[in-house]
Length: 231
Image 1 (tube, rainbow, N blue to C red):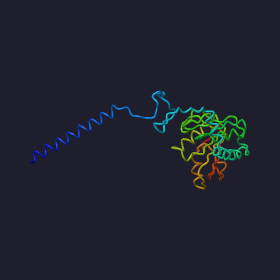
Image 2 (tube, rainbow, N blue to C red):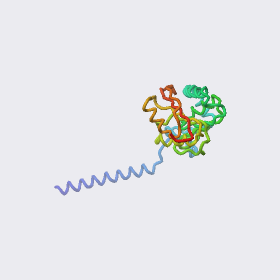
Image 3 (cartoon, rainbow, N blue to C red):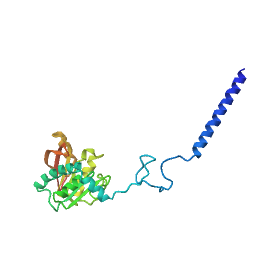
Image 4 (cartoon, helix red, strand yellow):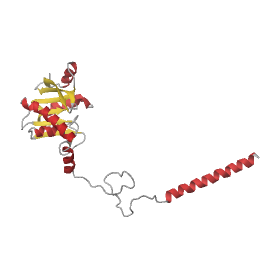
């Protein structure tokens, strides 16, 4: 009795194995049916298709048109206006002029360098880990590809986001000439926090601290002057 049951179970198992194998072979050999035409080009997409039915080629938008679309947006103009108002303060203090060689670190999409150009600066360099041409070029703020003392003014609004803030500060001081200025905008703070940030600048003297609104956020702006000696 037990032998008969065992034989029957073995036969049933074998039948299921054969059926499963046949189904797998059919699935492998059968060409899937999609709504993409056989005449369609082998690479019809500039982007990954949203579905198998999305076979229409997408036109690649030229960089100039892409930038024009972004720069004309309300969000861009709002952030640009915020940076322009912020830098006008330094222009009024006599720290920014049309001929000032300025550097923006961790410049993102390029609001800060565009704002500097908007208030009259003609020589602005901006860097970020990912470029955003033509405003921002690719470079590591921790290891800038510039000679010593080639800039008059350096700015970053992302020192508190840096992996090694002290290293970014070193690069700011190295690339700014003696008598030039470094400016950082950080989360709103005061007292000991400001002093801790200023201590990172071994070759600069604290000049001014102000609470400002930048990109709709409350920030603290710290201005330092690069000296000829370490303090």
